[in-house]
Amino acid sequence: MSKAPVTPTTRRRRLVVDLLLFLVLLALLAFLFLSGKNPCLSERHAVACTQAINLYGPGEVLARAEDEYQIIYLLQDGDSYALCQLVHPTGPFWMRGTLSSVSRDRSYPMTVLPTPKYLLVIVNDPNITEVEVLCYDYSGDGFQTLSLTEPTAADCYLFHYPSQQSAYQFSWDDFLLRGYDQAGELVFQSAVPDHWTEQWDLTIPEGK
Image (cartoon, rainbow, N blue to C red; front, side, top):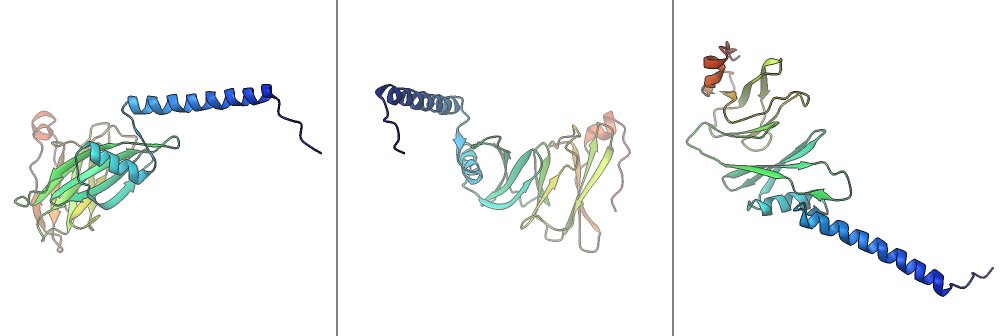
């Protein structure tokens, strides 16, 4: 059976529909670019864009971790380390994430970089083979001890706060670090946060 010939009216209707779809797509792309949330075509592209907008690197990817809400990359550029955080996409495009970086200071036993749910500890003392983080969850869980006996990558220990439901967030002055050698002896302990003892009158748990 031969197809019915396409009339000028049908052709014009199809042309109008195609034009409208093109304009909608163009408007969507313009909104994304003008809003500062430039879309990226892939996860790696989003990591590269995040580094570029933060004038970092490009760094070598040392590790990748993810949870229900986010993906985090551990990056290295010489003696500079960064945590690049991406949000899981809800559509076909990825968006630029956030990036925090720190320069490794080898004069200290450890260099740290906190983000809300992740804490990067870079060990500079070769005698330290286990890292312990003591934090206090004010939402009701009290002291929490996180421990890693193996580095995530090279000399880097990447800690993730275990509860996504907790309001606890890592910050520069709200945790205590301990480093142990292979025999389990304490090699290094950071200072106890002042507000734990002076404001909250907390009893600090001893190490192992």
